[in-house]
Amino acid sequence: MRKIVVLDAGTLGDDLSLLPLEAEGEVTVYRTSPPETVRERIAGADAVILNKVKIGEAQLPDEGAPGIICVAATGFDNIDLAACRRHGVAVANVRGYSSESVMQVTVGLVLSLITHLPTYCAATADGSYTRGGNANMLSPSYHEIAGLTWGIVGAGKIGSRVADVARALGCRVLTNRRHPDGVSVDLETLLRESDIVTIHTPLTSETRGLIGEAEIAMMKDGVILVNMARGAVTDEAAVAEAVKSGKIGALGCDVYSVEPFPESHPFYAIRDRENVLLTPHMSWGAYEARARCLSEMILNMRAFFAGEERNRVDL
Image (tube, rainbow, N blue to C red; front, side, top):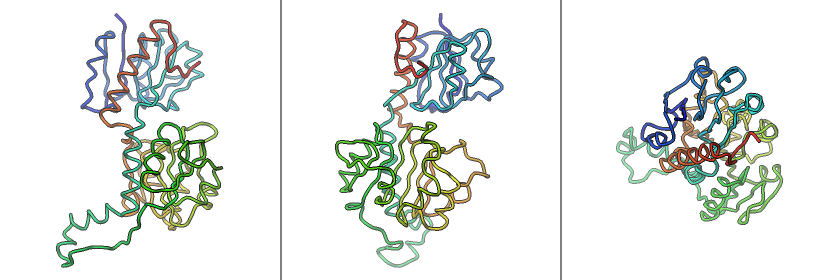
């Protein structure tokens, strides 16, 4: 019977049953796996399932390295592919499983920020509305989204779905990648012309630090910026300073260079501002998306053991 090890089941949600894995082999489940435990836990495994656990040379045993690592995500920047190749370990990711989920949270953040929904909800929750005596509260002022320009950095599956909804809301859509319902432009043009900028590009050596101080300076004053890609795609310190100065009028973010971010992180100091919505890397995780992810990982394992290539990122 094949040995399957799940290293960080806690990141997959307590409501998602892992019972389907038991039809594939003997399953050992760890809720979390500190770095010093990983090497021993994966030794002798046929397949390893993980989400955020980092795998590098130090975590791969010299003998008994796993046959395949199945990443419960599209991004695999936590995996040292060169080290895996040296140890003969296959790596497979899951693609397209969370497009609807991430789109939903992206649009939710943009709409909440542009209409100041957290501020208005807080007014009813803390009694300010009741004590105010007026039937309406209209401060802070907000604006309609129709007619605004929405720039999408990275118009892959997720960005394309965001573009679909942005157009349905009446926005002019700009992308820095061809999309049938948007206008493809260079990054500088996108940043200069957009009222809303959402980021959906993978983290690569080319996109690391893609949005920094210089790029923020190109943006409109008061721009709404939402990062749904990876934290390191932006210069987080520069983003935080731009929020403080008012250059960025509103910030939404679900991803960070360190997760969870510590008190020393630039965003910790702005986390409770009215124009900032920071979510704990949850946008990918609608129940349906996580169920699809598990099903896809099982198919990736089956393909590997059958000698087939499926969603391999190490080749």
